[in-house]
Amino acid sequence: MRNCAIITNPGAGSYSAIKMDTICRQLADSGIKAEIFPCSTFDEMAAEAARLATLQDGTVITAAGGDGTINAVFNGLAGWKATCAIIPMGTANVMAIELGIISSEDSIARIIAGDIRPLTAGLIRNSGRSSRFFLMAGVGLDGQIVRGVTLKTKKILGKGAYGLSALQSLAAWDSREIQITTEHEEFSCNSLIVTNAARYGGSFLLSGEASLFSPDFELVAIKGYSRRSAVHAITGILSAQSRSEALYRTKAARITINTKKPVQADGDDWGDSPLEIIAEPDYAEIII
Image (cartoon, rainbow, N blue to C red; front, side, top):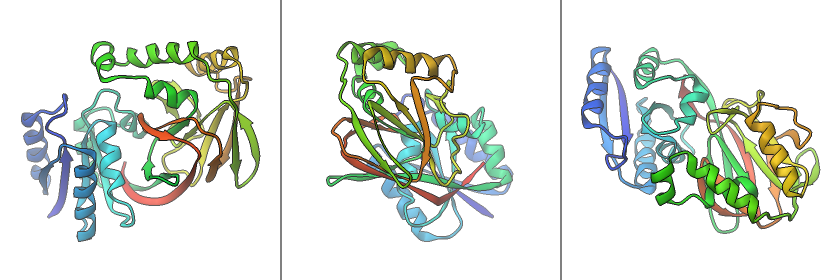
């Protein structure tokens, strides 16, 4: 019998004990023994995933929740190339959208089928900390927008909290340039997104060439330093103008950012640059 370890946060707003029991029964009906591991913090979820990965017994380590839960669980898999899966139960479910998963029932069917592909992670680090992202990291405007979203505004406005923060970030525009060095080139820009994900926030096409399975990243940079340039870049993304002149695009597997600006990773405030980002192909095997 195959095993499936489901790590989830019972304190999350989307959590349902009834739904989790149903998921376990559905997996059991297909010959998969499922066990739930409740955790309440990022560190607990990462530690539980790491403990399960060290067993190396073929268990499918599954994150049930939103993109924050997925990021925490997948961070715990470093160094083990474990098999992992997701059951989307969050608000945005960006990872699920990237994988084409439309529901928790769809996830269960895919876990039962067991098809896998190698997942690329992004190691992001500076002198003070390191972690991994699996969708995208943003430096500059993107990082400031995420930093400006409070729990209060997110609870009241939902996704609209990010729109409000974007307006506030543009009003307090930071025109400083950042210096980017990759294995191929050097360039300067105002803001940068380093992405494995094709869509920004799950809804807007950012890069049709980005992939969770690619060995390198798509880099999308705001070239100009004026507020108007940023508005043109944002408009280009929101209107799916993937070749907007306000944006510079390239590929890289190793990126160094030498200027201090706010940073987000997978939708959470990460801290500040300077920092280094390194692609880690074959980080884990993910059920697709």
